[in-house]
Image 1 (cartoon, helix red, strand yellow):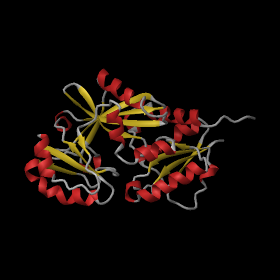
Image 2 (cartoon, helix red, strand yellow):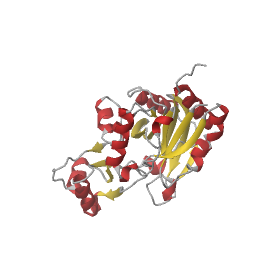
Image 3 (tube, rainbow, N blue to C red):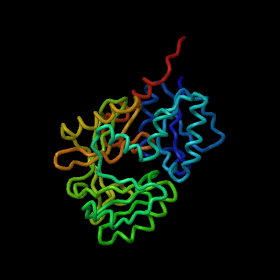
Image 4 (cartoon, rainbow, N blue to C red):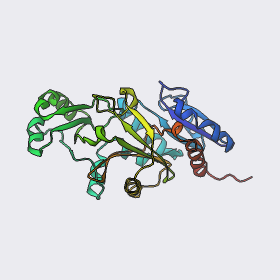
Length: 290
């Protein structure tokens, strides 16, 4: 029976509740799946027929160690999904610059570089942005993320300066449609659309994650949103799973995040989602001869 590692973090040694829903359909596919903590030195990664990244939700706190782990798997030709090269690329949000240059519509973003002296308030005034979100280039679950209005931008200047000297910083224009309409998350398995979630922040907040009181609802995306998300995935190498996050502004889908590492896939939100994911994993396993 093929063995699959569902890679998690020490905070979730038995998987998240959502990922746990994957175990039964994998068993029905005659696949033995088990959790494995990514930075547990005792794990024999080469003993698995597939290694599937799931809830490595602390990778951004020790990115250098995580990237070394990726490199070790790549060097050993371990069957990691998503592929190590894609995961490494996706670990730094500067990938959005690449997609932007290739013609993908992203949320307007500026990319101050190390050594650059940038006044956040002056920059926002020059751009005409009333509000902006300051983020680290390596981050997850709104870690060290701050919403700031132009008149109060000096309050976020220390964060900008600190990030410039560390993992790098990005500043995105705040999209009012996040509050007014919500943020879309479209989930794909083996590049095939599965389901979509519309996420909305709690009253008075801007973060859509449930950690901060945000809510999510299963919704059918507009045709143009689905087409835009599908087009984004054509710009990268094949994936086992993907989550495409974005907002709609003036009837255009603008990409906020393209998630290949550890996104919540909202398996509990759609009755067919766990089986779809399990079938996609089964297709990636090497064929065995009797």
